[in-house]
Image (cartoon, rainbow, N blue to C red; front, side, top):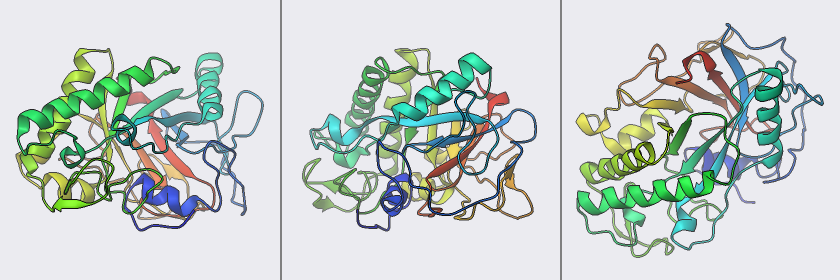
Amino acid sequence: MPWHSGTGRIGRWARVGAAAVLGGVAVLTVAAPAAAGDAPAGFWYGTDSSTMSPTGTGPYHEPVIGGSYGGYLGMTANWANLTGCHKVVVWSATNAAQASRNHTTYHLGIGTGAYYFMGGPGVDPHYTGGTGEAYAWGERQAADALSHLAHQTIDYPVVFADIELPGHSPSYTPADDNGWNSVYTSPCSGVVRKSSVPISVDRADLNGFAAYLTTHSPDKLGVYSAPDIWSSIFGTGTDASIPNTYEWTYESFTSSLSHHPYGWCLSGTSTCARFFGGQSSSSRYALMWQWSGGGGSRNGYGDFDQIDAARTP
């Protein structure tokens, strides 16, 4: 798989392609020091997306760095498939089962959670440029998410809307910005017909997703994104503010596995989690940090996450 320059999990997946097989087992190519476990109390190591190789036969241990395997997050569905573009969905049944078993049998971690790879208004087949249609597009995506979640075993009560600018990643999306900053001639064309989307229209899309998800299920809404990506889509005004929304960030990040998380920072470094939409790591809505593997970082294994289970709603 060629490498691409996107920002977010898709740009990063393309880079990891030489070391990981989607739906298969990651090929471990370098050694990294093991850790006794995550800290402080309430925090857990986890992974997301492509299959990795936790050690043990139950309870399972975090790949590469050691400690208890505290959770797995996978893509439940992709907007591009809702519109008939036939793109990749990255869900590891193996890691989901391992994380769920650790949670239900050994009372370790959060189990299995899910995210939806969300499309902006610019890939809506019925785009009008208005907030009403954008809201309805968000609702349709949430309905798609719930339809797929009904066939999966999910332990974690927060469903994350994955909002990012993936770059050129044709296996996952036909739109380099997932339709958040550009309008396309059709959802699957990859051809831009207008190079802007009003911020209010972007926010209406997210609002529709949130409202449908939370009124048609017991799930809570979360958002996976990063500070710079968030502001490039939603700006810095009122439409960017999400004070009561759960978050999973992928900044700051590193390609090195030498230093492991302690709380919201990597031990012995100045690398710390940065949240978005007006929130910080001190917020009770700050839940997860993808500290390596996201944002285009390459560690040779896959995606590593820090999870604050004490804040689980």
